Length: 176
Image (cartoon, rainbow, N blue to C red; front, side, top):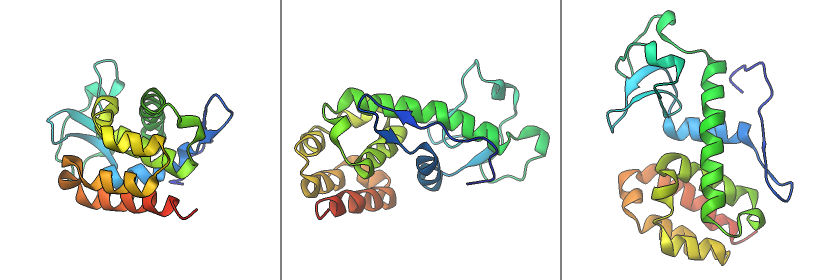
């Protein structure tokens, strides 16, 4: 996994179930992209790593902003290890958001938890909580309907490849 020296921190939930943070790192890096220098995201926020919005308190605040695909000097980049550290913090926020939204979080299959964390990472807790019909389908463990509801959203039209990929993973849970 990207040659990182430290072991990932899994998120232990109330029933001792874990979300595989290392696996999520790879999944979300593929969806979000990974840029080791600062750039402006589509919302014009200073961003680095795997979609990390640079905060005033982040040491990355001192780095200059470049185009996402620019060739940048090493002294203007973060390390792979720092990228992972930022991701770990951000993914814990997404996991917490999912736990706040879904009453049956602990009872969901790990694959469903991963899809939900991926969506919450992208949309935030507020954005994901707006998927009312999807939430009802997830809480009823009707994964076929949940997959349909995912595609019946503005999110699916904005990020169609990601939505299709994630909804297929959810639909496949119905046969498990």
